[in-house]
Length: 174
Image 1 (spheres, rainbow, N blue to C red):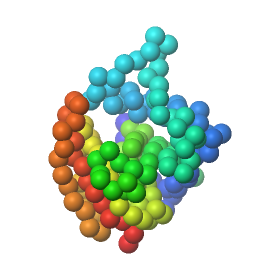
Image 2 (image 1 turned 90 degrees about the vertical axis):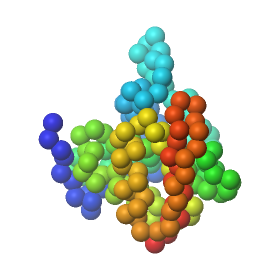
Image 3 (image 1 turned 45 degrees about the vertical axis):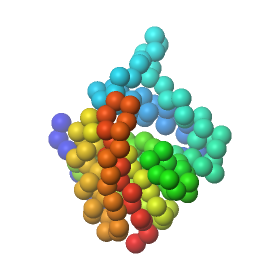
């Protein structure tokens, strides 16, 4: 399929509302399907992966934030789930990119880079991004995104359950 052409100015990042929970749940199924190539995720007898933490985004609105990536022309493009506090950082106030997803059609078209840079501009601070070394797409994507943001960052490698993780700590706020 040809790569979609979307100008960065056409992309918006919107905090998801509770009424969009089913939209987010549907996108999470696509994300989990993609991640099942990397991790041994289990699918239910009903044919769904599910995402156990989704309800916490509405139950803990001061700690967890769900964003939808959209375009006026192309519609829904993906999502970013974030939290305050990261399992990969000692700072309890560090912000964490918990999950990040862009629909396949829009990958390699600057949608993901634009969306995460928009997020970092909106919520400046210390951010962590964790990517499993078994995830070739993520391993290719995140170093470019972090290094092109234009602020101080560091990279470290930490052991994980299935793979080592690359962890990026990024000080945002240009």
